[in-house]
Image 1 (cartoon, rainbow, N blue to C red):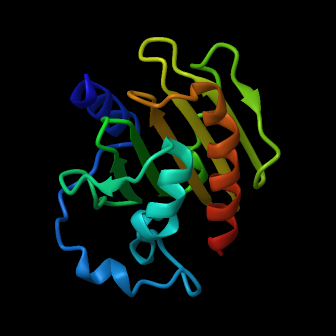
Image 2 (cartoon, rainbow, N blue to C red):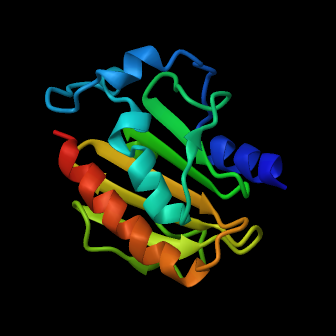
Length: 166
């Protein structure tokens, strides 16, 4: 189920290329970002952010970190297979809006945004826009005890992350 959810999220997020070298991530600063190639989604939303959303320590799923073209993405996973996929897009055209999520709610984060529960898998999806940047967070709640707390924690992490973008 974890791989099905990850495949779905990555397909929605335009996909990701494999990048197992984490040494470059450790020193990445978000202070001088100008293009998506300057963004490391695994730094923008780090391990402590992922743990605060998923409720337990998370590590990067090395098969999903990276990105291509106008994206940077990272997947955080816990021992119980709870998953948080972070994708940063360069360009407002990547903002999907909430049309595909019945019951999605507008967020007052960045310029515009939404959060909603994905009806097929029960995951929580969030997208926010800041200028030409789009931040997407998708959480698969496998093993997460407090599913009701996901929207609040994801919104808090999105607010912090979007403030780090130029």
